[in-house]
Image: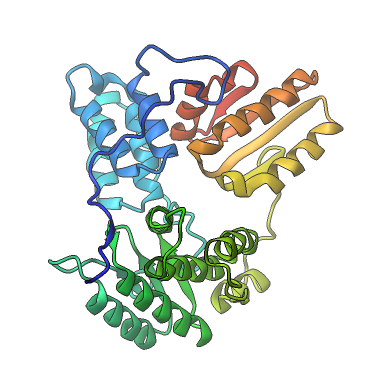
Length: 365
């Protein structure tokens, strides 16, 4: 009998609201404002649901006056590099509020591919989509051939809402082959696939589940997540009572070259716009950044944190982030979280972080 696929079709899924705190010690019984609810959806990884909620808000007779909802939509479309939808609401925003919308930037996906905005920006983009029966084998074969032909690839896995053990094996093998060829690879929307794979792990591991583990190991290698790889290896060893795969170093030659040799005529890199700089997705994997922030704060009375590089604060990590900010403030220091995009600002307000820090939004227009 074939191993059933794991996962289910995505819809307007909203994360269950915890009965306890959302990053603070207070309990939230009243409904949250739409902007804050959308921010929590995005924080929990439900980007499509957050976009749908905000899009519905700006079409509502009352909600269309909610400027914050518009600005959050601009942020989410920018992060997704959805220029078509961004431009579609730009004119409506201008007419409604009699001001220019936030400027579109080609580097807005902050996806770490240094070639974004170059002439071949989309030529090596490949979206992995299941066939009518949910099968991925054919698409995985096409992806491998496509990457060979292009010499590099940006793989989008947003459409994968279920994956069989057989397809997981094929995808892991295709990625490992390209990695060993030193093919430059980038990824879009990996978080959803990683959650899907973890959902396939049962407490009592079976041989049918092994392909999901092995694909997750490969994704961690390609992203350079050595600490997460090690943690997963410990889980694997306990689950299967055998040694996990070995860590292998993968170097994206294009990104490495870009880092080592900036484009001619480029100005020297400047430091953070304001104070200590947080970057990327703030999650349990950001413990080192939070540790560095605490060290930075120890010798200062005013602690300025530049949030311009923060893509998202993971919902599961919000209590720890809240506690880190609170601890600095309770030590008698003034905390300023600066250059926050509208989505993250709404989340921090929902958590109550604004009781312990001054929130300074990024200039949007």
